[in-house]
Image 1 (tube, protein in one colour):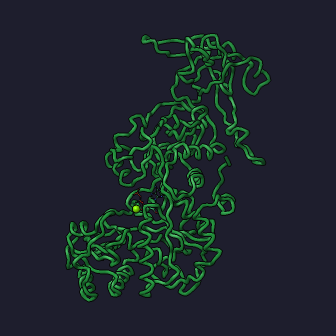
Image 2: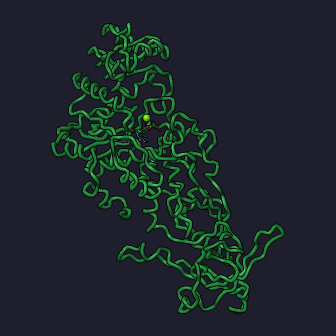
Image 3: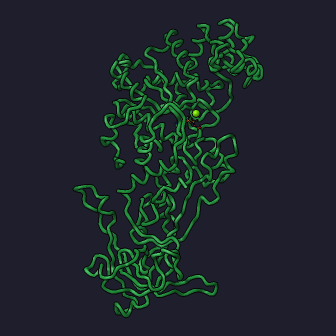
Amino acid sequence: MTSPTPPNSPADSADHKVSNFLRQIIEKDIEQGTYDSRRWAGSPGDAAHHAKGEPDPAKIRTRFPPEPNGYLHVGHAKSICINFGLAKEYGGVCHLRFDDTNPEKEDTEYVNSIIDAVKWLGFDWAQLGQAAGSAAPYQASDYFDFMYRAAESLIEAGHAYVDEQSAEDMRANRGDFGKPGVDSPFRSRTVAENLARFREMKGGQLADGAAVLRAKIDMASPNINMRDPAIYRIRRATHHHTGDTWCIYPMYTFAHPIEDALEQITHSICTLEFEDQRPFYDWLMERLCECGLLAAPSPKQYEFARLNLTYVITSKRKLAQMVNEGKVSGWDDPRMPTIVGLRRRGYTPESLRLFADRIGVTKSDSWIDYSTLEGCLREDLENKAHRGMAVLDPVKLVLTNWAEAFGSDGYTEDCTQPALPHSAIAEGHTPPADRVFKIGKEVWIEREDFEEVPPKGYKRLFPGNVVRLKGGYVIECTGCARDAAGRVTEVHAKVLPGTKSGTPGADSVKAKAAITWVGVADGVQAEVRLYDRLFAEAHPDAGGKDFLQSLNPDSLKVVTAYVEPSLAGAQPDQKFQFERFGYFVADRLDHLAGAKPVFNRVTGLKDSWGK
Ligand code: ATP
Ligand code: MG
């Protein structure tokens, strides 16, 4: 496995990437100059940003076109990495474009979260996608005027008609896989009649749902998407951007190719479910070129397999349902597969880019194991996250001979340990400053590190056994105290002076094990949120079952822990490796907000998903 690399490093350039079908297509187009004749023609999509008639300096143009109807998830992260990543590698640009053709469901809260997510993933859309100084991403609603003109042109050329069949009739007459469709009685309307009726739709003279504009293609086509698809519908709804200007809205399948064409997109990369839409995409490009509304070369659509991740749901609708029903604390709950959730959980942009690279781009659907994602995170954090000790299930250990050995019960001594192991420091780099923490008469240890009657093979504390307090002294266990219920309240041991780590006597006594601990003198109480998988089943929404039934009731456990001072001083969002436990992050929102530091478990040290 290679180690993770920072953004803009050689691994982000095309030379170092594994080839895939998209790279092959792009490389061929660049080599053959497929898009060299593109000129910025002052169409609605580019007028603001580009001089008229100038050749397009970008070798390729891709786009990432989310619908702003929810927060982005890990599947979108794959798509962002593909689209922005390819543009970056091949000297092109990638447009962040809001597909805001659906007026009811969209919201500026989502728009802002999407902008943040793209930036956080390491793709500066303002640099990679826009001309300098342009303030906003692209949005489909900017092209509503052009789309309307395109619709009228189709009508004028005999390629579209206003259908006023009832919704039921339209559905029945579409046919199905085994049965060709039946022409609508409105299909033979004249151009003049269609134009007049379409203008009435636009003018608000028809009720919502009373009519649709349809492309006139082929009601017998084996591809149902070519059986006169609807391209405009009547919908009286206030749009978050265009307000009440329109009461008709273009359908996504009609709008999307036009958006691509106006923005001079070269490679329109989408997920496989759009494969059957490609013939319509091409049909529309050809018709609009014939009408003279668009100029060749047209963008081309390419499909790749969407990300399916085990134990994870990637449907905005279902994620919204979990938020709305209070199954999670919000879109940014650290158990959510949203980009804001992953970020709060402690995932890094580097780990998500590494993940996107590693899973690659393919043409066939498959499931990726969640452990692949976690593995990428471990790989990224291994050499970055400072180490520290935390005790998650504390019991007090008392070193009963402390005053005898060091002169007083209140005596403490500094211990030092490296913040990163030697192996994590790249050649020529200065290691970070050592961690310093205090050992004294009392320290916190894990409850599971003491057994009065040790099971077979147990090497930690039991009466008579000798272990090292990691980075401190070797101690010999003498026993424990219990409360009335028999629960251990204190573990007792004797310190062996002269055995401290890093001193000449360190090896004078052989310890059976080294255990993690935090000093009572300088340990800080912390809230630690132990997250586990949100769903107990690998395919929570497979086969149409109710995904809420698969929620893991133990996906969050909160404990009060003790952490060493270097951890207590963390900045929000700072990641650590808690020795023996795994990776933790200081919660972005709550860490400095209350009385105690707050840490989230990101992942354990080893893969636990295979079990
Ligand atoms: P959802 O089904 O979760 O609502 P969507 O496809 O409707 O997602 P869009 O906002 O339309 O969401 O998606 C923007 C882009 O992200 C599209 O190009 C889409 O193909 C891509 N995308 C969405 N989900 C995935 C996924 N699981 N894997 C890869 N790409 C995805
Ligand atoms: Mg969609």
